[in-house]
Length: 224
Image 1 (spheres, helix red, strand yellow):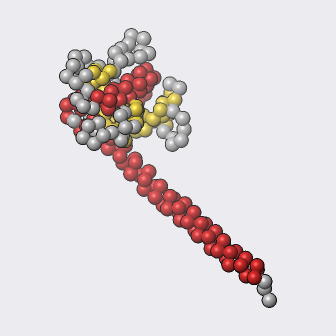
Image 2 (cartoon, one colour):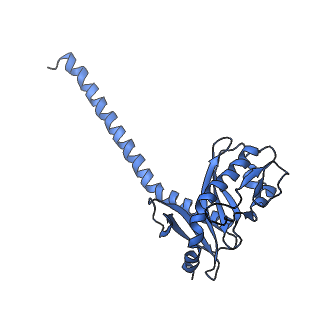
Image 3 (cartoon, one colour):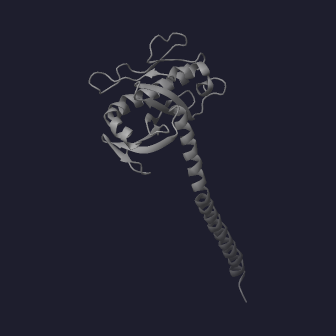
């Protein structure tokens, strides 16, 4: 005949086994869900980037991904160190531009964007905001304001005579005061967000373009 202590211990043991089983099942379901959804999420991200590249490199119909590492152009491999760039080509394989990601702190958080650089004019031809948390109706206008978007029709990104930095740093100026082709005219009421875009472009272009320019002939040959 079991003692009262043993009777109390038996239900407690059973409860622990049930809880352990529930925890293991929950963990299994989380892992299974992650494995099932990961390919779909990755594919959606790929399609989103493809659409963004097409926007910032107008006229491009095919894109190739590369890694820029220590001044060398390498085939893209996920997880490897280096700056990811996207080369955009027209229907005849002619290089139209290169897209790269950048980001800077905005008003409510980081602003991440993709921008397109056109070698023939040495200018930035477009931007696409990839992720942000700016105030609706104010800071988020950087995505949709037509006047703000015209800043990137041909934003000056020429290199200096030594080819080591931009000839003119990209800067954001007060709304309505833009006079130079390397200036970004801010959105009234969204100055911080506008400045973040200018800062992100300048930081990336200052570092990327001096490395990229000597590799343009190689990128051109890749499309032929």
